[in-house]
Image (cartoon, rainbow, N blue to C red; front, side, top):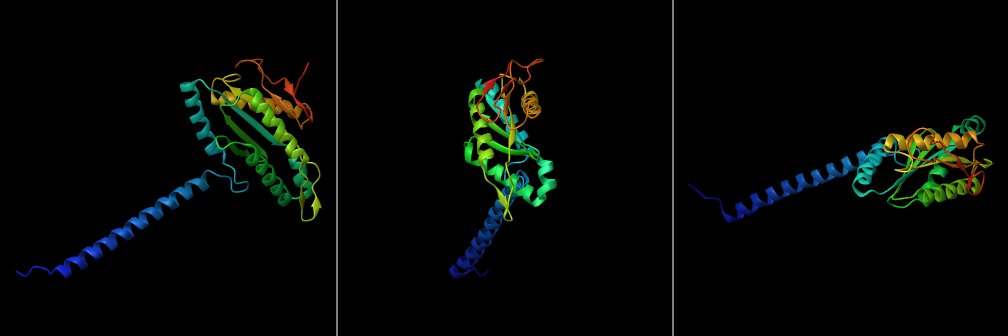
Length: 226
């Protein structure tokens, strides 16, 4: 029987190492592709913000954290005022431009620990872990002013004033569950729009009936409604 020479051993080892290197490279590439694909699946392609699917995941994680640490989480529900009329007048391309501009305002103002998501259509949600109602109100009013003072143009046309209405709610102040939290913020948003738009409204009172928002900022400054 003839044994392979040392040179043949080295050649075989080299081929094995090369094959392993190729397999490892493919595994890393596949892992990166999966990560990119998952990230794309969890983001809104129009605005670059996270989408509703990721929002639900994030809120469920926050609910678990609150139960363990007894901290707070606040939510802003934000809607662009008169957006359908805007689209009808300026066109959908200009409407997309506005959505992207508003989304940029969120990214400029929130912390790394916060989340801004496109809830659907012209409605957005900002989640603020560890933030009190007062802190959430301050940020909401800041965002409202940022949007109001932005001068947007598209294809050389002045797009006029863009305004947003914002509803604020905090868990556990206004809700015991994530579903209640979103509902409380949505009710506050509805109250803001019903009260004249371009304002911030905050849910009041403990979870349960009669909690509906009564605090507002009509175009500047939070105030208590009588």
